[in-house]
Image 1 (cartoon, rainbow, N blue to C red):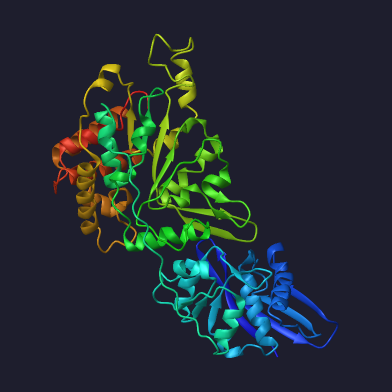
Image 2 (cartoon, rainbow, N blue to C red):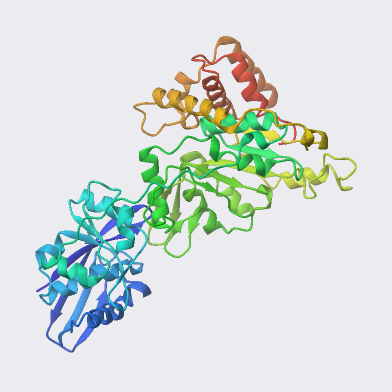
Length: 502
């Protein structure tokens, strides 16, 4: 008779239920796993056999076949160890079949029978809740999975504890959610000397999630400004925290089951490969753009990234998701991030300084910035030239506003947007507005409309650029607390788009 247990296979952040069928029949003794297992799943038979021997459980002299259904779905990862062991124990009548079928399980088995943490506990818990089952997972995954309150989570430390629970000998208490991670302290904006225009752009970007590029010589403070952006952003909402944590769960980045309300800040090096940035590789893992979902992706030395890597950003910026195409599957990850890029004006970095620029200036600057294609540059809402800071400015006392004050304005603008877009599920900030919603919310007064039309005609704005100016202007109006979109808001939005060398 066939015994069954249940687990999941991952396709991006989506889960596909896998039924683990086990039959122990007469025939030549053996242990086979079928159903498109990868190497890690195939090796489960040795881990399961050895772990059972450590628990003094001998396998019968029968032919044991484990089928992972649906057979056409590729199975990857060591998390299949525990469901295979449960189905096998039910097939040889050590565990009650009905009890095993009422749980969804995942976990890696050590040779001594202990259960090791695996990735993906959070999306698996959501699947368990949707199918009205209990989740059985290793002790290390319990605090993470328990954040899904709709599912009961049992987190034994060893396979022996799971067996005792199913047999009613020592019931396992449900796992408790992990601790909310404290928000990390970020550098204060008041430490930045000068650069008032660059600070203003940072505030607008944070308020409406508008993409931003800084261009300036080395040491002007581009990276310093970008690393102060997380302090301006409001904490993640509960829904955003869950969506972001599901991606980090699949990447194995959740420590001790603790979720965070802090927005992610990803800072890939310019030598990063395309799979590292957009996702892919073995198992089609999430890349940096997905790990930055609901947060910030900071790409320093932007033109130094490989051209194909930069061009792959164009579609995710527009759609908020990335699809990793494989021959047998298409894996989809969300990636609604705020892109902040920083670049030198040329390779040597001193094109604007006559005393230090190379002999090829300004041609070298044109060649260098042309590494960023026109369609990609068109997706930056805010383009800011960051001039060098003089030594006299460095000696002056701090000027400008502290992070807390600017963050309060950003939070107020975000609250206004949340109220405005209530009922629009796919729209949370001004950068998400499209179509009729943009026509309704981003409609300027007559003077502002005339100013925008003149600028669009004179400077050759694309349709995308035209709409992005409207979105930025709406954010500027929100920061001013203005319900109307007026000419000064349009003017400031245009000033950030119509720079000379960016």
